[in-house]
Length: 125
Image (cartoon, rainbow, N blue to C red; front, side):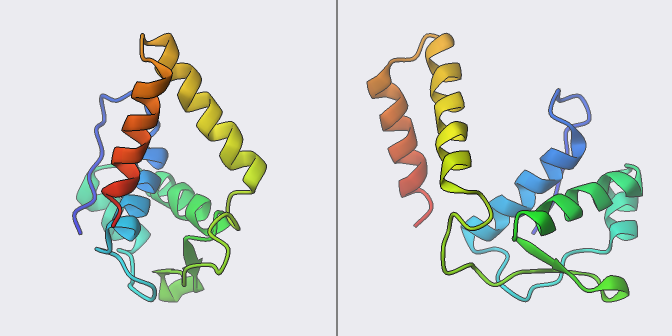
């Protein structure tokens, strides 16, 4: 799996890394037990600070996507029995509500938002 970042993006680099790993998990490119690149090597490959990679990995760990085994590295965690375990149902609802509000503020309609969400969900299979 190729992990990239856009240094000109307004999205913080650690969130871009987080999102890239989550996309890899969702697409099946990363499976439970797969090792992620070491913090140092990924930072060097991307030309970013190793603390940025460490923050991304810590965020993924806190959300339940990754397990950290000290010096042995970071690995993709087993999928939780409850898909909302890392993100509570309230958090998920709030995140979706925020997306819906932003979509509407940019001129989108309710039906277009639902269609876009359905399309995105269908691409996960």
